[in-house]
Length: 247
View 1 (spheres, rainbow, N blue to C red):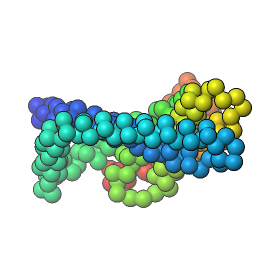
View 2 (view 1 turned 135 degrees about the vertical axis):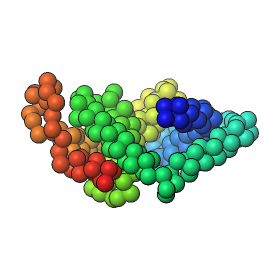
View 3 (view 1 turned 180 degrees about the vertical axis):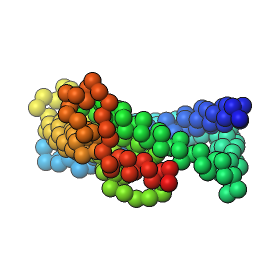
């Protein structure tokens, strides 16, 4: 049993090593597509030349990223395909309809993971620009686990909405940093000002939504001061979503 689980983990790690470089390169191209889309919404009434410079820079970065993606795919596609097929075969083999033990074990494991992540979110430090992106990753992880139930519920919707809002802010923050560096010699640049203002607004929106999510789902039933020292009881919405995994 332990040897089988070790073999599964080993194959999973091999698959991740095979596809991670491709995912990373694809993510870089995706980032440039998003930033170019954001930049296209900026008013060019003033500092039109700065906007053109920014778009040209993003276009070049995207082209460079696309070249790297193609090279990575050519180099790793055979290994990635083989690993993904092996992983798919392993999943199919272990989730056959007649494998009652696996059908019993994985929901329990998923429920345990959901409770662990929920506990981490309940004890998350105060949200800020420094911690918000990491909070998004944890929210995203919990959403993936809860979705394994195959049921749609309000928690999944709220987690997805917060994940998207934080992701949008993070992309605008990346564009803000890039524009300030690229157009640093342009004093009082209207393009930089517009991007910075939008990034601030997106942050405030994402922060409020995240704080509301924590309040409604992850603050537990005891006061905040007591929560720091004692374990807190989870709200019924979390317990219900977790129970649906093991049902």
